[in-house]
Image 1 (spheres, rainbow, N blue to C red):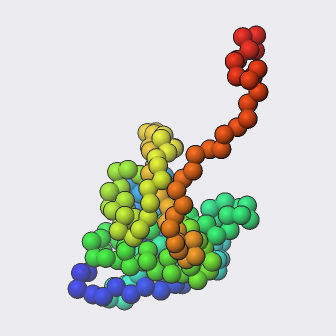
Image 2 (image 1 turned 60 degrees about the vertical axis):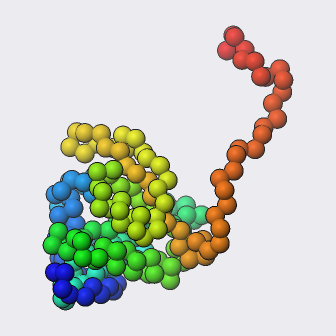
Image 3 (image 1 turned 90 degrees about the vertical axis):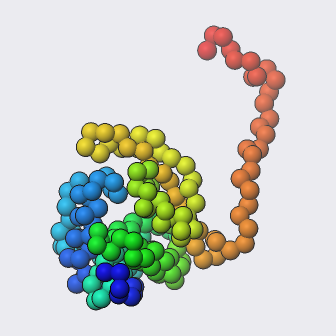
Length: 196
């Protein structure tokens, strides 16, 4: 698969079987998702429709075959978060190391910017070295680690939190993280009450 050129485009319903195959590889390998049940093409179509026009799904093709996909989905339902998407990216086993993951993720950035999405976030298992390397190569920032975020097959798993600013939010310098503002405290309240 390394000899073909990678092209990207928005996903269509007829890509669902290929997307399901790639996603199911990630589920089976147990280093990319907490999901444990394989997905059907019908479930993929339903997920694409649920995300709608605002949250795109894109695919990468090599030699006319879908070899990777990436999608943004709703981060939170509050209106203030409408421009934040939670993203996923999966690459077919046979296409890993060909640049298809980077190509499909960069295509997702463009599609998200066109739709007014200003930030993408995700959680990645620390063992998923390839995904963390892809994030670094495409400009994501590691925010921190969720310790014991959830269990997979009875074992606690940590997650590395990543974010990438897009469009207008990515322009200019990032403001430094500021210290919390001092709080006025009544001197009488500075000492804890032993009777409490």
